[in-house]
Length: 269
Image 1 (cartoon, helix red, strand yellow):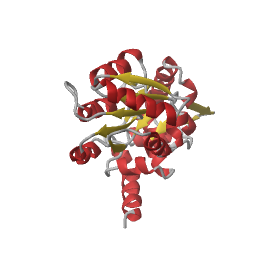
Image 2: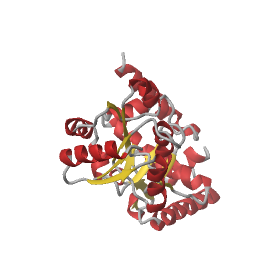
Image 3: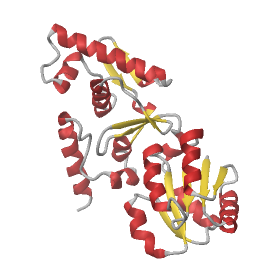
Image 4: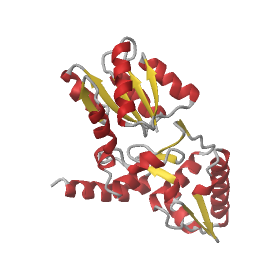
């Protein structure tokens, strides 16, 4: 497990390191005196921490600003703010921070934060990260996956929505174009999209995500780390991230969006 600690004061940073090391002896700990330095390590060195303990008030990029940038490049990383000031708590949770601790950081507090981490984050660092809430996005090791065609990405979104259920050309055609996929030219378009999707995934070494069953195609749900799937599994962090928006890029996703909305509101009554 990789854990970052960020604080512009060296004594407090060293103190955080000792607390983390005592709580998680097997963890790899990286220390940063600025949020910019930590962000560069993620972007250029492809270091994706499971957890970040971060000060809020720092010169340059603040902890709050860092958390926003971090969600773009490493959406699965959890941020716990460690600060001397309680006044930042509301703003911190607006950035969907995972926790908020008043200094000093202690080993028992580190263990408490680790106990909140869902198993998916401990085990799935080499899986595709799929974000369904809001606009549909796919990430590999913190970087957005580049789809050559807009509809190749939509095809992958549709397969994610099906949660491993196999799809025929008719299913895909009905969703993407509303024509049932029966026409000869439509079937060829679908074959082209499937081949393009296979190439895209193989390029990043994730070709096994797709499963072909004769003329049917599906995805392997266990090969992706998806907020939608985690929500269905009862992960409260995923549940809290849902704001009623699901794959807003695609009209065919409205049925699932409605189902999730009523499921979520029903639980909150």
